[in-house]
Amino acid sequence: ASATEYEKAAFYRDQIQLLHQLDKDQQTVNGHCDVFAIESRDSHAAIQVLAIRQGKVSGNHSYFPLNPQLEEPSQVLESFMGQFYLNQIGREIPPRLIVNMPLNEQQWLSEALSLTAKQKIKILHRVQEPYLSWLKLATDNARLALKSHLASSQMILQRYQALAETLHLPMKATWRLE
Image (cartoon, rainbow, N blue to C red):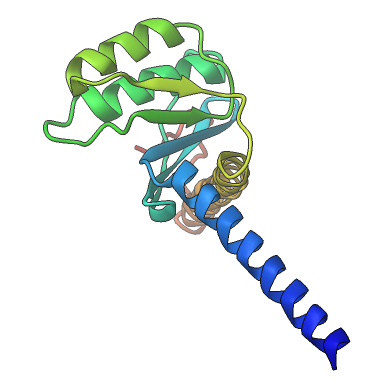
């Protein structure tokens, strides 16, 4: 009988330790952060933004900025982040911004956002759990969004080509979809 009491005690001890660890983890992620990931191919890019609030994903959106000058993905992301926060009045800037690559002007952007938010803003690209899981999620979503976006653009172009053939119109190599 006493052996089962020790087993119960060990079980409860383990459960209490687990709860303490979960509480500690929750305290770590209780703050707000936004997670940015970019994937690009040629002049197309997909930027995924995850809004993390109270340790949970509260928002998720894909953006597709054009990159006709074929800038480096880090430059496109940096420019996007500045516009994302600085061009929208009243948008909350959380104290941590997680990115999937280092930014060239990271210090400057961090200072500009800190002045706007009236609090210290950190931009991080080397992170550990739980931020790493969110960063992986955002990166995977950006990759899938870009793939879907490119497939959709290609499908529309194929429809235009089929229409041109049906109407016996000459094909133009310079057709652009706006």
